[in-house]
Length: 297
Image (cartoon, rainbow, N blue to C red; front, side, top):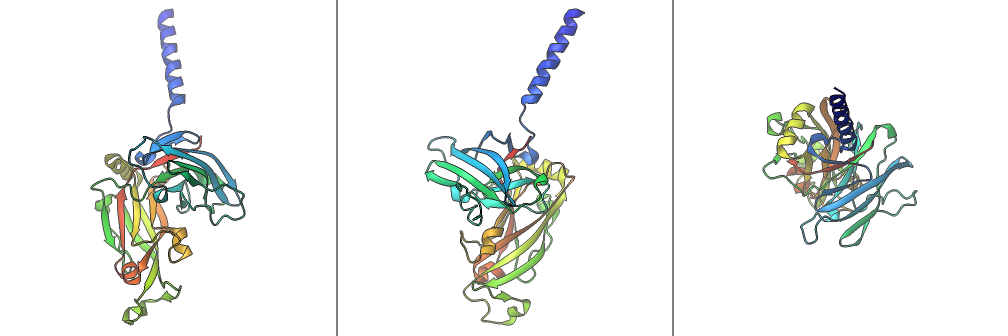
């Protein structure tokens, strides 16, 4: 009997130790690690550490090296980071240039000192409610899981009609739409009758709502091998036609807090370029992707 009790106690101790060392659960089939640890994602070994708050911004230190020499990897300019948690709306930034608006802080912005290295500080925000931030995620708008694309037209002045949830398990719809010429002059729906209104370049700001059941989104993400991202096209690389387009971006990862029972995400995206393409022939797509997530303890 004593031997049996000792054996059971040993098993409990080992199980407890293993449980304590386990990696955090990976919501929506992301790769997950604790802040300070490294993840192999997008062809890089990426470490995110030292999450802190300063001047209404969230700052983290990023260090990345190729996960395998000579293997394909995402270009640093195509990598985006975002804040994870119960946020009012997604907050993301490009890996390169994410701190250019944060002139009040003395930081060494994330950069590529060599072709096989990314290092420095990433700025995400503004985000004043510190209690809602539970981690940082990374993805690339160009990293797409095959056979997971659903694309929809989003033409001014109507925008995107509500999508069928059977397409992706989520419903996507437009909540606002604003169109501009490249010089910043705003267009209203009456411009549709003006043959000269749609010439040159322009941009469109789309307010979007993404909604669905969290349980279904978890199951669908497991089958896909990753969460979904929403992409708006056409687009231009920074600095683009408007600072608003740099702030909003043309993509967003759908990664709600895992504690929520529903997916309810409000985001703003920008289309830009030739005014006809950006306003009248724009598209919004939902695509599966691979993502990494670092969470606080």
